[in-house]
Length: 549
Image (cartoon, rainbow, N blue to C red; front, side):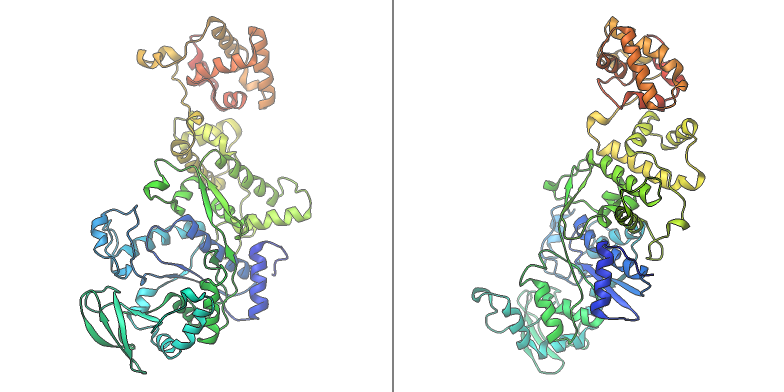
């Protein structure tokens, strides 16, 4: 069952097995602090782990994929895209899990952001086991790990200082833990003493509270980040966890955590790799980075089907920076995915065996899976392919009615089979959203009503560019010689030839006829490729629009 591909996820899986040895269970981990909207850059880590976990499962291995919500971290600042800013500022320095949900939907601010992600991940076939660190810390789950850190705090200080220059080395007394005040819940506290056993004393600089806590029972004691992370590696027996380029910088948190894990918690750090940043190009609707809005997986899934969304990541090595587009590049991305799909299904011949193997594996990993393994092509239905651009045109021809567009498609070309409709509807929903919210203005069009300009109100007619007598004559010839015989053209090429013949008959340049046709049909100087456009619209509707020419 071992794949023989050189896809990066398979390479990572093979490295995990080689370095960690044969095991009954491999643990892959990811996690984030829900301090604000979980954006698409954060999603890159989640799906990178999912792809490696899937590669391991494809090799016949048992895999545990854990996702940690670090919801016991400090609420340090209010993101500028959050509502009720003044209200949220009252909870600065609290644990995130104790901050109220400003939308009043969930039990806390942290839980709101967690739910937003957890509700969307299954759509792209990602189903990790969630671990909530607030629950763990507040029930003293890590008491032994905390005590170990206190017992070895001098060693921890040495490890952390090893990667710092003189100016940034730890000065004075240092503790590997912090405390949320039991009285006011803020972390504006200082450790006073550890009794060498389970007692830890602190005082609060915010409310003045002083007390001695029992580590085995206290809910407010938390390990520092560079100690907490490796402690959990050992606790969960993590074999693989990637990290962003900031964590992977020399002397960064992964370097220190690796040493802490081995020297303090006696566990070898997980296999890892660095993943790079993600950029965005074009923004849906009225979104803008300056207003604090960020792109989320939910935003991506409005424009890209789950399979194409996975394809963006499966087809790109994690250490490569790339851009997720919402502008006209969306069409190209769908075209690239469709080509990969054709090669995988052998509807299109690959250049050679290596290209086939690469494209097939990318396609497998792009498919949504219910069991965390790559679905086998022979177990599925061959997809129905329709270019994204053409689908956008069909939906606009149908005045935004997806079901009518699909019905027209079936009437004109035989259409999809029943088992292909679900996937086609999903793509159509993305096409509709993209046209209405992301596509540039020149991509939009709306067919004029039956009766053409005569059916418009005087105000609507005033907005249209009037046609000359020569242009009107060219439209008449197009109507009679091309549209009147549209069913005789087997493909766009033969239809295009007839259009140019009509222009020649009218004594005008092809560009003149094209411009006149677009004005007569959609009231614009340009539009979709004319031959394809005419063949996608019912003959009766076209004749109705142009009947008065």
